[in-house]
Image (cartoon, rainbow, N blue to C red):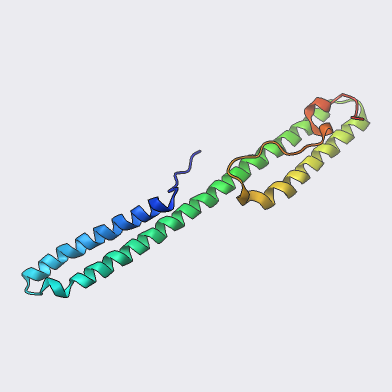
Length: 155
């Protein structure tokens, strides 16, 4: 899933200027109508400039808000992807342990998988806003991987 974003300050500034220019033009058209009614254009040009500047500022702030909102949504999506990956791997390890005959190895691997889930939750959740992409690889002790099922415990 790709979220559209306005990336740079320049893009936000251009959007604000375009809205300001549109409002200025609209106000200028109204000025032409007022001129036909006998009101001098000199009396309304300052109003047009102020309306254009206020419109540009409002558009810039709105686009900035939307950009920040989309960045927060992206961070939440990345966190969900990371948590899904790591917890699913730990649950797969627990599932594979069900077929083991050696109770001691089974319980050690289940405890290791629970430790993995705990570590993922304590390491990833507090850092949700500090990443640009999913972190599928965390530092993991060697005895937490699926390759250790049925094997000897590491020395």
